[in-house]
Image (cartoon, rainbow, N blue to C red):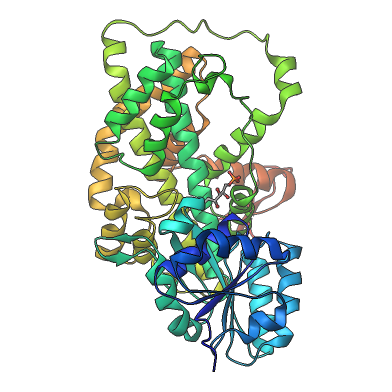
Length: 479
Ligand code: 6PG
C-alpha cells in the first residue's frame, strides 16, 4: 500500500506553500493540491528535498492521499473562495475528518462553516496563523479554534511547526468554533494599534526634535534593547534606517503616506462596537489609516492654519525622547489591555472559555505583535485569572503610573505643536476615564431623559427614574 500523507495543504500561494514546507521540514508527509497544477509541480521541483511531499492533481486524488482522520489545510483567499473549496472537498470526506481554514477568515464565517460541517460529521477548524510569509515557513504563532476532539489529532502537528519560546510552542487550542479566528482578528487589531503608536512616536521625534529618520532608527534600536523589545520596534528601526536607492532619500520619505488595510482591524472595531467594548486604540488606529487615505480631503485642508512646528529646545528637548518612550510604553499597555478585554467579551458572548494567559503565551513568538512584555501579560493573567484590566495588575500598574507624567507631557507637546497623536491621546483618555471617580456620563443621562424620557438610575436609590422636565417643579417619578 502506498504511504499516505499526515496532512494536506490546498492553495499553494506563498502562505500555503510555506506552511506545507514547514510541515514537511518537521517530518510530516504532506499532500499538495492547488487549482492550477503548475504551483504544485514548482513546489516539488524547488523544495522536494526538504521533506516528504505527495503532489496530487485532483480533489479526489488529494483526499485519497490523506491518512484518516484526514487533515486538510485550506489556504485560500478569505470569503467566497473558502466556501468554494470547502464545497469541493467536503462531499469527498468521511465523518471525523478535519478541514482547517488557515486564512484570515471572519470568525462569524468560521462559526457558520463549523456548524454546517458539524452537521455533516466533519470537523472544521478555523485557525489564526500569524507571522507573514517568513513565519509560515520558520514558525508562526498558531491560534486554532474548532472542537477539542479535532485538536487531539491536529494539535501535535500544528505545535510542531509553530514558533517556540523557552521551549513552549506558540500554538494552543484557543476555544471552540470561531474562537481561533476571533483571537487572530483581535491580534490584528492590536497590531494596528501598536503600529500606529510607533508611527506617532516617529512623527513626534521628527516634528518636535527635528530628528532625521536615520537618527530615529537609532532611537528605536536603543528602545528595542529595553522593555519595548518587540518585532514591530525592530522592523521599524530597519525601515527608518533604509535609504531609497533611486533618490538617495530616506525610504520613509518616498513612500506615499496613505496606509492601507485588508480589513481585520476594521472587523475588530466593528465587533468591538457590537460587543460594547471601548477598544479606542484599535479604533483610532483604524481611523488614522482611513484618514491618511483621503488624499483629496487632505489636499483641500492642507493650508489650514496650525501652530508653528518649532522644534523643542533645551532641557525639554533633552528629555523628550525618553518621555516618548514612556508614553509609548503606557499607550501600548492600554492597547493590549483593550484587546485582551475584547477577547474576554467575545468569549462571554459566544460561550468560549478563552485562557488569556495562554493567548499571551502563544503571542510571545512567531506573530507580528511578538514582544518581550507578553511574558509579563502572561504572568499577569496567570497570577490573577479574573483580572478586569491589565492596567491594575502589579507591574503594569506601577510602570504606567510611573510613566504618566511623561505621557501627559508628550500628549500636551503634541497638541501644542500640532502633531496628530490619536493613539497616544485616546490611550491617555482611556486611562483617565477608567480611573475617574465620576464621569460626565451622568450629564448625558440627564440630557437623554430631558429630550427623550430615556430614564436614569440614581446613585442613592435602586430603581429607574424619569423627571417631568416640562412640569412645574420638575417632579421625579419612578419609571
Ligand atoms: C499576521 C498579519 C497578517 C497580515 C495582516 C495585514 O499576523 O501575520 O497580521 O495577517 O499581514 O492581515 O493586515 P492589513 O493589510 O490589514 O494591514
